[in-house]
Image (tube, rainbow, N blue to C red; front, side, top):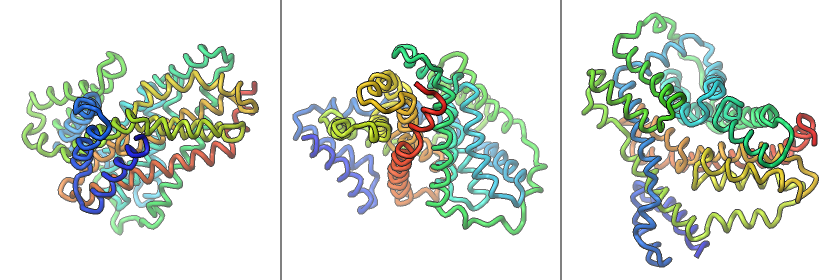
Length: 424
């Protein structure tokens, strides 16, 4: 049954890609059949639709639909591009750097996920870079910043270290190891999408840097800041914070609510939520456990680090890295290192940290979903059903490539660096 559930999941993806249908709609149709074969109920399928993710997607895409409607995001992107001038090779460096800084100063990964993809896509449109590539590089650059001691993810690591009795302060070592991983991932993505072939525009955009933000644009950008304040200092759910700020902007005629709601990428929202419902059935039938148990059975001192990262990545496909993967797997690292022998606990923690984040580029995870939402909001008519399905598959491929890069990095330098930075 576990194997059959995995077959059902990949069948939905293949069918949608071949027939050019919305993957989410097909996933629900296959899910209806699957629950009857597996002896489950329709409620098991419906319960797989994440209300939290729905709230996040609707709130974030509505807020950035408003920001886009005012022209603020487009102008901000043009100003950033103008600063680079004809040196557009700087942009694939500046975007991940901005992501790292914004995450590390305190918000953590989730709030900044709402900002980087739309900004990266908008900048890509100004320069000729692939929008998906820029969004992926932006998110990849956020990786190591998530484990700053100031972030929620950093707090989880500190708590896990304390609970395990491990006496070292692991965060700086984890940040450095995952930073090297993120640099390698960004370079791989840049090469995959042939970013090196993009040339500077014949005419620069320096003239656009002098254009001023109008009142509505300033208000919409302040709305993003207000959302971050609500999330970080008040503890409001990211989706609810975005919806609340959107309501304020619309109430004061910051944009036309009918136009903004219509501009939201509803096809993408349906796709992500419904595929997540089918993936929940795979999880219930033991499909994910089947894969992780197979990995655990072959762990040794050499394979433990890369396999721990892979297990974190697989778990991240069906759950939140922040609320499930890190709290569950981080405390295991010290004991597992002691059982296996010859492996540094910080190396295992770094692998869990990177695996939970890098798999987040999957279209079923928050990062991948928000990338698709940003593409849908920014590209509008260009983001056709066929293009959407292509992006869905590309995100799956990039997620797999990210995890493959993590496996190689885990084998090559995680344990040596952990022993150097945090000896036990």
